[in-house]
Image (cartoon, rainbow, N blue to C red):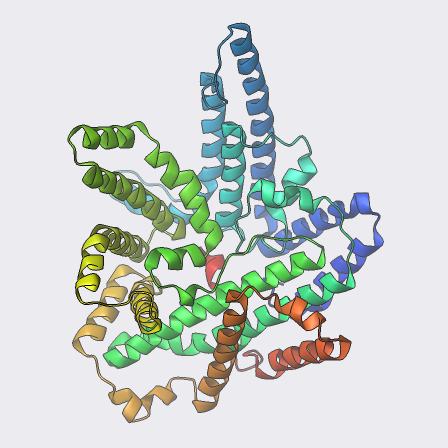
Length: 522
């Protein structure tokens, strides 16, 4: 077993955990989840489980120390009859302990993601050092950000440090989210995890239905498209620009179905145990602007970057000074834009580093930063032009134009994101621009790249269904609740049909190599 997507996981591991969890008394059910989570992590990462344990123990102890130092500082402040906020009572010792906790948890993430960069640096020095190489433990990028959010919130005084080590351990390791998130905050999930909720028929149905929908997106669409996309990215010189454009579009759809499908599986599993994990996708392809897209795509990462990178940068002394200088110079808009650009650039830079050390990731971060900043800069002028042309910005056709424009910009970014390095990405972009042609569609070559017309038809049907589901969810309708209102026959007919579709049309078996989840590589 090396992921969720194995017969061993859905045929043995998950059913066994659900049964044992249901049989245990309420107060002990969290122990079942913790043992299952550590067993799952061990099966995927073996001895590297020590990193997860070390991270858990470190944030638990650092949190307790921070709370004790804060209480001591507040007591001293009270004796001195001063009115200080929690942030102001952060003593030098608190800052030191907090910094050590952050560095301790960041070090493994940096080591695994940027070991190649360190080797390149050392190779230019007159020393001989052989660095060890290991596969990164599952979910290290995700549980590290969760660990840091816990430390930051305790340091800020937003939450008290938890004295329950088991709850902290389960918060970091909960198996439905350990592979790809969502990156939950402590206050969102921790107490749910130890509540010991019953496995109800309603939660079992709703959870399993969402799991099946996630499986449909992952194994029917994403895994099937992988064969085509891999060929385009591996051998770009063999195809014209039209094929490269199609490859980038299909990679975007693969990425979405792979990532959001895995989120559906994770949230569905959590639902079975009566636990509500935060949503990570909210119909991103209905977005009319790039900022809106990133508010709907990988929501937990975006809000993490906003709350722990962007806003602290905006509240920093240099940015405050810049805003103050702008007011004095009577140029508040321009200084406000510069301050915004500075905070946005730092957030996108950190996001690029989080995804990996490759130049393609940093380019994509700069690309979206530049477009979002230019959009904000030019918005007043754009509105004046639209007003002069008497364009109704609330009309359906204009909304459709905005959605299409946003999609095109996203596809260009994804073209770079999916390449193995920046050089390969630039080659693809050059072909897209200089050799754009529909010849491969006219002569049928598009059907010769490991996918035939039947594969494209199956993908199109599932994507059409996903569009319908997206429209329904956009209107605030809970599909599981809606199905429950249709009666038991309809409920289980829907469940069986979806289950059979995954079994019959899923891309697996002797002709398919297992396709690892894309975001588990980050």
